[in-house]
Length: 236
Image (cartoon, rainbow, N blue to C red):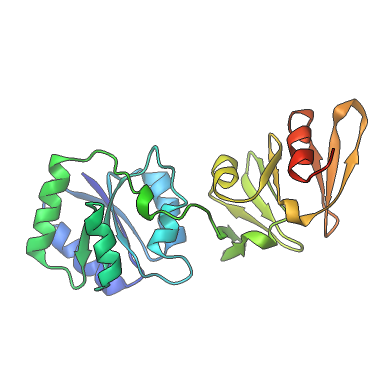
């Protein structure tokens, strides 16, 4: 069973690693100190189980869940300091959780349960329905971009790029996921546009169009998506 640990407290990670290493049936394949790095490792390493801290800065463990593909999501074990409301939510939905500091007997019970059943969980009851911000990286930095600041998102062979008024950064999230979880609208196979950041739509020949954003960026609109875009904006 391949395990990934995501926790912003290094001592908490080390303590959990030490406890897990006592079980020879487990393989710890990675650890991350924040949700953004955790998302990257989940996508790259494909762990069976993720021990996920809830209280982390910038993006919480719950925020991270909204960024994962529900079809390929690993089994999640929540790790938290005592929070009666969070724990009640976990218990109501029969989720695995561990309280800090971690008790080795409780961890053993959790591991036994996991070994009996590694089927995908339905974590939808506690996953946010929408994303309020997009985690991005670029030039050796991590950037959290609020959805309202996004003018458009594009994809190419280098990845998915998020454009604001004056900045461009790369996200690990897919266009499909962003389309499902944000107000961004599909206007082209490789582009999403924020409807509130549209300044004008230029109608071109052959049923094509071009969106100009509030800061002057030009975004292509294909015939396939022009009608839906116009209807969403209330344009006949």
